[in-house]
Image (cartoon, rainbow, N blue to C red; front, side, top):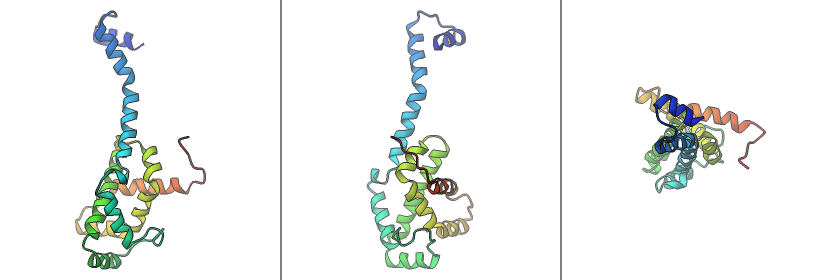
Length: 171
């Protein structure tokens, strides 16, 4: 079928070696794309970067996920944290930018959403919930309502997915 397509569309002869390699490459393209999307999802693991684990440690030490589960950190608390540890704000921005980039690549179909969800779904939703007041504040200060918009949409979708009682596993 692939060879017939290439003969009709490209004017190649059926005994042409280039034709056979074109057909095999074309047939493997969806598989290769899928593998690249899964590999791309793995790149967004927090342990895959030397800076992200340190950023998460800094942010989570000041606002532990278990204590803040389902709660928003107020701007006043964020200011106190910034005064207590000067690294806090840049580290939080680094993590939010990381999650925004992940959300954008998922939206663009570059990263496999199912793999990313399994790896970081709960963590991403937790950050969005805890630091939503800060995200809104940055949107207002920078006069940019699109700031972290991919992250917000992904977090909303994943929050619903996490609430589902039936969990899908890869095995």
